[in-house]
Length: 237
Image 1 (spheres, helix red, strand yellow):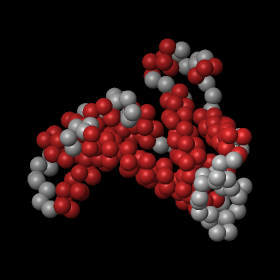
Image 2: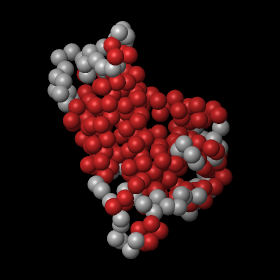
Image 3: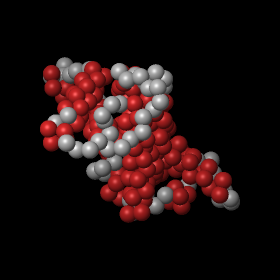
Image 4: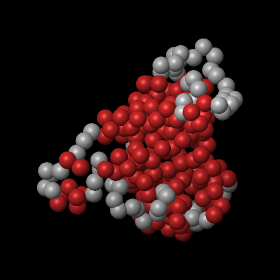
C-alpha cells in the first residue's frame, strides 16, 4: 500500500526524501540495468510518483544525490585509511582499490553522471553537485599532502581525480553488458580479460610515479613549493 500521507514538518520531509534515495539504492543493488524509472522508485519507496517529483525535480537528481551519499561513505573510509597511524601509502592504495572494486552502484553512477545524469538537472543543482564532489576529493588530497614529502594539494587533487576516472573505465571494462558476454559464449578474448584489482594497483603506481616525476621535472625545479601543513610525527612509506 502506498504511503500517501503528506510529510508535515522538516524532519518528516527530510526522512521522506531520504527514503526515496534509499529506495533507489536498493533497486540498483538488485539490478544495475536498466535504470529504474520514477515509477519503479516510487513503488520501492512506498509513495506515489507525485511524491517523487515533490522532492526532486527530475529522476536524475535522485541518482546524483545517491552518488554523492555513497561517495561520502566511500571517501570517509578512505580518509580514515590516510589518517591511520602510522601513515602507510600502501594501505591507502589498498583501501582505494577496494572502494573501486566492491561498490558497483557507486561505479555505475560515476560512469553515467557526466554524460547522462548531469544532462537533465538544473544549473543550481549541478553546481551544488560539482562543489560537493570536489569537496570529497579535496579532503583526501589535503590529508595525503600532509603526509607526503614534496607533493602539494594541487598534485594530489589531479592524482585522485585521474585515478577515479581511469578506475571507472576499468570497472566498466570488467563488467561488460550481458550481450557482449553472450556474443563470445563465455570465451572472452584477451581484450576483455584481466584482473580488476591488479590493474587498479598498477594504475595507482604508474600515476603516482608520474606525479612524482612531474614534480621533479626541470620546469618545476625553480618553482617555490606550495605551502602546506604536515602531520606531526607522520611516517612516510
